[in-house]
Image (cartoon, rainbow, N blue to C red; front, top):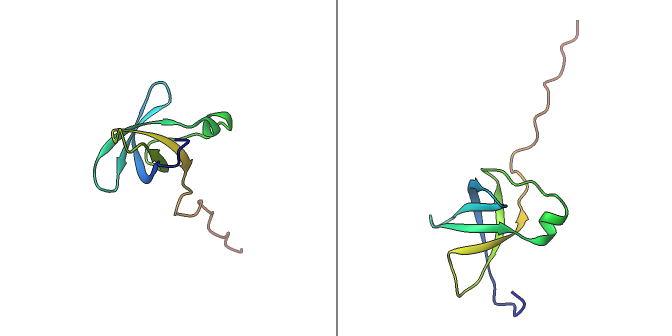
Length: 86
């Protein structure tokens, strides 16, 4: 989208398809087909079902998108409870 008219949206990965394609559900309930951008592919960013992502969509075709960013998890990583003293 070199002309800067891309629409940025956020969504959640619903299904992982072959060939680095994904089904992504937007906040309004629509499901679009998305592929990974080159920078994510180059840096080996792994995307799984349930991940929140940021995407770019063309205003001409609202059924396809390009994933540009994988959002961080809202919940903190698991930490083990403290050990009891004896």
